[in-house]
Length: 201
Image (cartoon, rainbow, N blue to C red; front, side):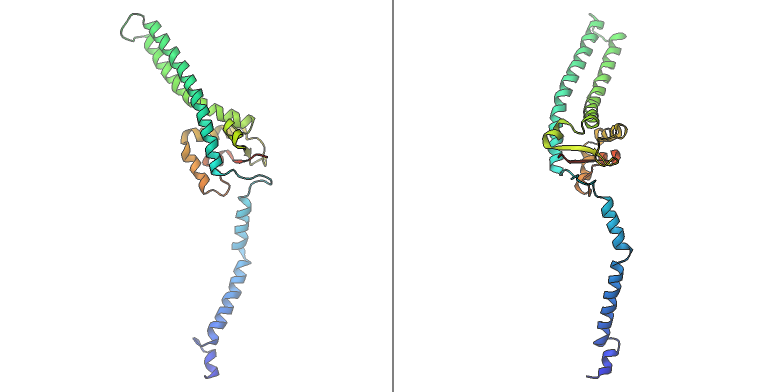
């Protein structure tokens, strides 16, 4: 074979030279900004030292326990509220078969308060539990607690946790779906509150 053929484009020497150039360029690319940028992103997504994100299944079981507790609280709250409302309504209506005036107003106010308590009870349960203890009863049983990422693991801030629990009560399980693909296993309400659910020591 003619040795000069190796130096021509398409010859045996040309691909080897091109391959060497590609390896050199790829090595320079690895040492450039893209690799550094990925490292910075990975570092930003890490939790504070010593903290480990809770798995989704544990958070689910903790939420189910809290839901059972809240069902009992709601049952008692709604029962008492509706019971008082109906008692006052019938007392003000007397022997009349139609609800008019004060009796009708009491009935409407009682129903509105019942719905308000049904929303406020879960909200206050979660908000007070997380700001005072860092965990609800369900999280305590599963060995989990909520931490403030701004302070590196302290108790959640009351103001941001207020918004956090509001988002959770409004969106429910939709907010929790974010855990499935988030690097720090944060739900949407965790993002809002700048918190994370971690494994207790």
